[in-house]
Length: 154
Image (tube, rainbow, N blue to C red; front, side, top):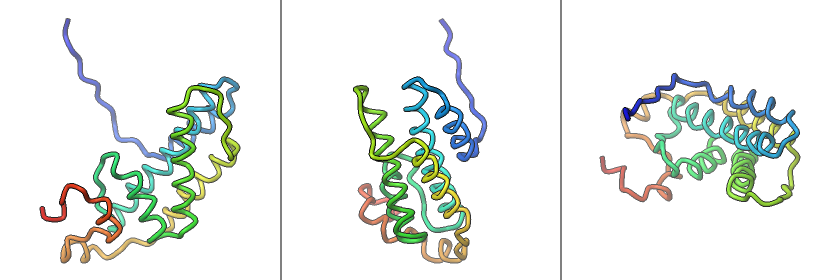
């Protein structure tokens, strides 16, 4: 047997939100749960990529980014946007890791709307001066609580 490599092209995380809307229109549990998952990842990945591109953070590109992004959204965008991203993550964790019957405190429409608000808020955030990253090796102070591997010394 031979192994084959999978190759994927770059994706705009906002396309996950379009997929979430399509999945939300389906009646089966798998599609509706997947809609929550895709809505969260649309907001999370777009926020991570935009905050990095606008010189607010240096992502880890690992599971450490999840709390790191919520914290930095609270710090650099707005408290409610960071809280919304975290609520999306909690909803996603509930539906992903629990296969039993569950009830969320949000509707599927509210979850998709929340993801859209997070994306819109991050999209309108102005870029920071690139000088900060070059001069200081900039990483948000919020990252210090998430920096368990002493990566700032690199």
